[in-house]
Length: 199
Image (cartoon, rainbow, N blue to C red; front, top):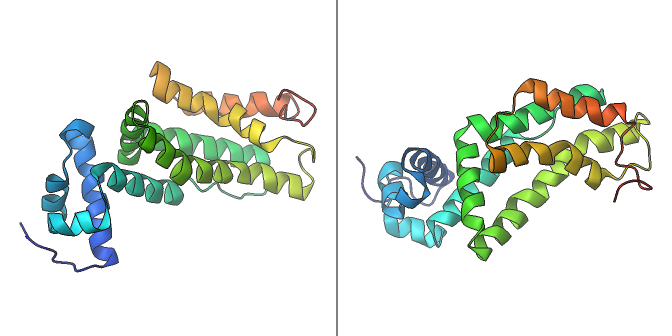
């Protein structure tokens, strides 16, 4: 095991810390995760971590935000139905099957009684994720393939919120059949997130 900051203040060290936090979160859970454990796993000094992040929660949020940006950028096939089906399936897989999804579930739980975590999660992830989730709809509108008066924010809520509900509330599985059904229902109603619609 390496001790001290063997990487220096580098991107390599940052990635080592973020990966260690992800791995240990899955292995030990939020309560069992410590900055000392992350430092040992990453091979950096604990003092180095504290210079970069004030707490283990900050490390987890940064790790999750990086993972989400990499994994959850929607495809662009030129077809709205295909893009939505593929994207919602990836959202479901990300939240239920990846280490980053386990981190998100832990952070969402922590956010229920820690307003600072809730605010960071909203500011650093949810706002940006909503923008990513909107991309297939905005592209379809720009192509003329979807109504120009679509209320995109509301449409995103209709499409994505049921996935989070299953992941965070009911614990039910989120199979491809389910995410495809969300898309089919949305499109069969003509894109019910219309400006004159259900706000």
